[in-house]
Amino acid sequence: MTADGHWLVVVDPQVVFAAPGTSPWGSPMFAGAVDRMRALAERFGPERTIVTRFVADPSLGGSWGPYYAEWPFALVPDADPLYAVVPELEGLAGSVVTAGTFGKWPVLRELVGADARVTVAGVATDCCVVSTVLPMADAGVTVEVVADACAGSTPQNHAQALAAMALFGPQVTIT
Image (tube, rainbow, N blue to C red; front, top):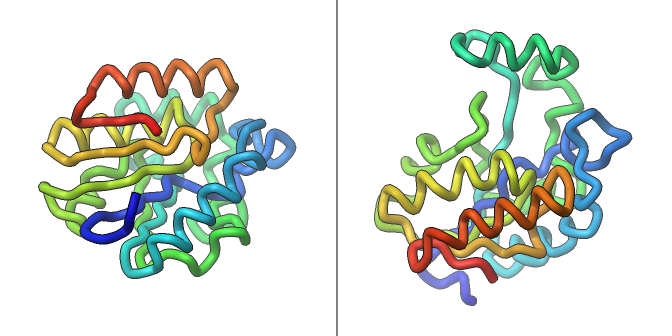
């Protein structure tokens, strides 16, 4: 895998997802994946690395109302330390995009284009990663998901999400 001609997207490497003690959304797998995320970002360099951030946006309406009723801790401003990129990855991306939805493809498309090749890492494999990867593949992007640079909400959910994304080969490959 080389950085020539394609992008790295690190999905939501934020404090809110960094550890179970940090928030109810903390991944028990994050500590084992963050160094791999960092190594990928260093390999691709800032000019080809994009970090995404999830932030609460209760104005979205619809199913987001009941979602935030279940997770009220998340209703903090964008600048709250909970939504900060973890220190291990701070400054390694040339672009940081923020969205109030799990999937980040609509904002990423503007940066990488519709015919891109994208390597994906991040958290949570079973939420924001899969919600980003599948629309990318559907739009014609060639996607490689680096399994050991992703962290799920649980190891079982991580494995299930990887298996679901693998069903979309050859548009999506799991390495």
